[in-house]
Structures are given as C-alpha cells and as structure tokens.
Amino acid sequence: MIGFIQQLRQRTPLGWLQLSHEKSRLLVALGGIAFADVLMFMQLGFQTALFESNTKLHHSIQADIFLVSPQARNLLNASTFTRRRLYQAMDVQGVKSAEAMYISIVDWKNPQTQQKTSVLVIGINPEKPAFDLVDVNSQIDRVKLPDTVLFDRASRGDYKEAIAQVAQGKPVTTEIDRRTITISGLFSIGASFAADGNLITSDQNFLRLFPKREASSVSLGLVQLEPGYDPKQVKAVLESHLDHDVKVLTKAEFIEFETDYWKKNTAIGFIFSLGVGMGFLVGVIIVYQVLSTDVNSHIKEYATFKAMGYNNLYLLGVVFEEAIILAVLGFIPGAIAPLGLYYLTRNATNLPVYMTLARALTVLGLTMIMCIISGAIATRKLQSADPADMF
Image (cartoon, rainbow, N blue to C red):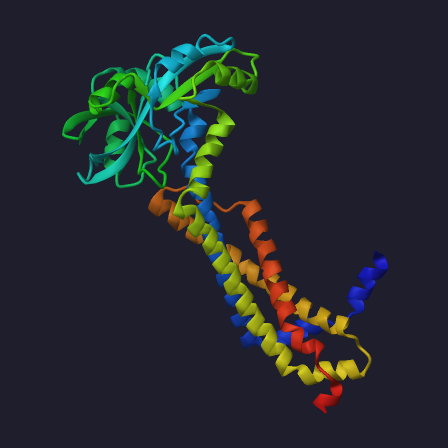
C-alpha cells in the first residue's frame, strides 16, 4: 500500500495539467457538471418531498394496525368499508381498541384571503387519541363543540394573521360548502402534493360537513394492540377473521402502501425519476464533449507517448484521471447551489425539501459514474491512434 502511494506521488499528474492548461474550457466543463448535479439534486429532493409530505400524516397516526378498503388507492382515495369490521376486530385476542377515522378532501375559504383552496378534513373520535401529536391531544376537547376544527399551521398558503389570532386564543371563522366553521386550535403536520393543509375535527362534525356520508362508512380503521402482542401475528389473525371487503396492514405496510401509490401509480413519481435520468444524461454529454475535445487536441502527444512505449492502459488512465477530477470539482458547486434552492422551495411550498448526506453521496456517485462513462466513450479514438499515421 505504501509503495502504491509513493508511485502516485511520483507520477506526473498529466490529467490535471491538461485540464488546467485550458482554464476557460475547464470552467465551462465544471459549470456543465454543476448544472447536471443541481438538476439531479432538485429532482431527487422533490421526489423525496413527495413521499415524505404524503406520509407525514401516516407517521403521526397512533395505531398498530390499519384497516382499509381493498379499493383504496391511497389515503386521499381511501374508499370506505363498513364499520362492522371494527366491531369484529375487537373480538380478536390482543386488540385493545378499533376506532374509525373519516377522511375527505374539500375546498374551503382561506380565512385570511377568502380564496378557495383544498384541505384534507379528518374526523376522529375525540374520546380516543388517534394522533401521536401533543398539540392535537391537548386540544382535542375543543372539537367536541359543533362545527369546530383544529388547523394545521404548516399548511401551504397565506395564513399568518389567522394563525397568530388563533395562537392568541381568539377563534377564527370561515366556510366549507357554505357552512360556517370555527378554528379553535393549531397543530403541525404540513402540506402535501395533494392537499394544501389539514383540518382535524370530531367524527360528528365531519358528518355535519359531509351530510351525504354515512356514519357506518369509514375511511380507515385504527387498531391498537395490548402491550406484548406482535402486530404481524395479530394481522394474520385479523385477515382470517374478517371478510375480504377489508385489507389489513401494519403501520409500516400502511406507509409503504402510500409511497408505492405515488411512486408507481402516478405520473409525478415517474416525472421526477425521468428528471434525474435527464440530468445524468446531460452531464454525460457535457463531459464527453470536454474530454473528446481534449483528446483530439492532444492526439499527437498521445501518439508520441505510444511511440515511446507507453501502452493504451496508461493513456486511458490519463483520460479517466481527467474524468474523476471533473467529477469532484464539478460536484462542489453542484452541491452548494441546491442548498439555497431547497431553502427557497421550502419557503414557497412548505414541502420538506432538505439536503441529506445520503442524497449527497448518491449524487456524488452518479457524478463519478457519469464522468467515467464519458471518459470511456472519449477514449475510443485514443485507442486507435497510431504514431505512424500522426507523423
């Protein structure tokens, strides 16, 4: 190992010398690679925000097992099943409680701007905690009052004045389908790609807001287990005990169920994946153009090296050295710029777009692969260079 390091130190850095000789070309190449990296960072950030924003609610629900309709596509398109399945679930050993959750998306008037926007309305039994959120559980008694809701302060839109008023203990009123409702408390979950915010209220208030909805038709069943029982084992018993008009999921499966919908069954997940691929392809083309131009401009020098006895492997190493240098130097500005873009996106959309170490390493790996592929393509002419043809 020590001998290898000494060889590297003694080796002339031809790749770096060739790149740094044409500084303008080097800067253009680094700019192109940085652009490709920014594109990949943004697409991966949006994709992660899509999954996280649409599963934040799932993570906050306090349940060990979830009952959903087999026709459910995701939480917003949950369909419904009969409430009888919850009573039947209570007969299974290990089940502590089985509560109903009602879910629907609706347009409401922004209490501050009076503009209509979509929000997710969630109805729960106020006597049974359904969320692992201190703000919700400490204020849940307020939604027992008719037409009273708790509002998600992390919703997307202009709500600063309304939120400040509610935070001071002053209720705010607005409308849903010409019905006046009162906001009496706040909590935080956050906006998603499908809804600008969330409202939590009692099951009775939910049925008042949606008079066509029957109390016997529930969106989600929340099953809590007695301490010491394994959710997977109880799930297997529930599946055999309940009819096939309901699907039984553990919490991890419920979250995966939502993620899979956005990843596989919507155009959004595909578009973000395509954006990453396009960024990668743009980077390959840019780096190839730089390396190909460099090889062509120094083809006689490479031929001279061949005449001196250097083999193709050595010359290919020089080009790959250039490719790796471009990858590392181009990644640095390509990783810094998204930090500001992520910040602007969070402020504009309230979506959870953050830089993570895993994403940075992923993009760095993609950048290295991108530049190595470009180097491999650019060296095709180099391998066929014949000193006799050059002089």
